[in-house]
Image (cartoon, rainbow, N blue to C red):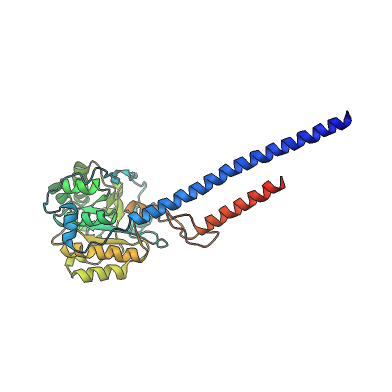
Length: 355
């Protein structure tokens, strides 16, 4: 009888051990499948995205025209059935209080809140395009067509009276997913104006942009980059983020297409905010230079990102604290991730064998 009990106990223990091992193997197998599926999906999505972001080059302004039928200054608001406006997704900040009175303290205070920007993160290979003084047919339409071709989102700092004159074109910028900023009503040198005149320049422009797009702008670029304490106090009271630039090819002076290209490519670096113009006169040289600038920078490894993303990434570390390897945004699974997965699978096999 004792022997039978002993045999029964041994049998039951073996049975329980087999059940535990089987359960463990099933759960481990499911975990392995899930991990491999996630890595496969991420890798496939990255490859698909990279393929989708490799359009053929635009070889002429005429090709840019034909890409979106840009012969008419009056543009239909609807770019495409799938155009999704993203400009309104940027939350409007609150005015900073208390706000200092000296210019240097004002700049330091705004910079501490990422509200005074001249460039992005110098550790990340990303740049942002911006265009001033529009909307201005036909050049704004041509620039929009090129940006759509390459899948790039830019920021258009608009003049209020231009926005009032061409609301459909401003609406098209918004519907294409670009961001629209405030560049005053008539492009004056703001430090020479009174506080009330500065406020009027900004609020009337905000009204015109909101009337055309339904969105009140959160970004402000002072004409000529000129500021004083009154300008920054007014901008802060309206909860505007001041955006300057780090790359200026002086395309407004029409130095020639090749000069514009050379100046941008020689000045650009990580986190650059590139200033160009779609308004203020004949911008055919800017239009002609844009495809070469985009393709050249992409070949160098730069990513074109919207201005809000550039600002969001200001404090992001480019290097992993543990491995020292560069961590890219929205990247495919890294070799390190595959190594970790293989080690995890090997550990599971060892544990299963010892159970």
